[in-house]
Image (tube, rainbow, N blue to C red):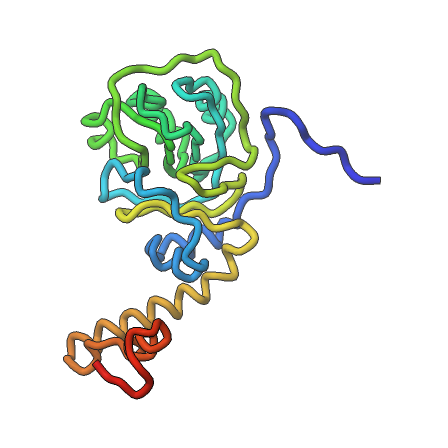
Length: 232
């Protein structure tokens, strides 16, 4: 007999990406992880870091809201564990801010790992001074309402990317990438190799012996730009 499906709007229990995977993944740039994950999982570029000096890495704690209402974000903050990344599907709404200095000071005090808002923030100057990782679509001084229901720890869409509770979320100056929890550990070895390959490529460029990519002419032939045997 199968176990009953949890249909509650608030799901309290889910499997998070393992702490050791988070720790190892935190050493890599979002671009490296995106490449080895098949060049997928990056949220839309509209979601940008408030400060390029901050980074985040941790398990996704997902929140779905109605545009302009942050009731469920307050609920999520009361439930999330240290290290969790709040990932909020705010429908890319910019008509008001969903979070500001008060809430984000609380997030920092709770030990959360950061916030990814597909929506707007406010109190920009205070948040820059706070130094807590915040990614959003921009700022708006207008405040939200607090009475429309939503869902917590259901699969969401954030910046055009599917995010499930517990997925690995990594953000840096380039933006945010989401890696499925089940895939996260497996891509770490690929990330190590990717970094080594890129470092060697840069070393070759600086030495002057590998400026032109070895694959370039072959790809141009495959694309029909060059004929067989033709060189640039």
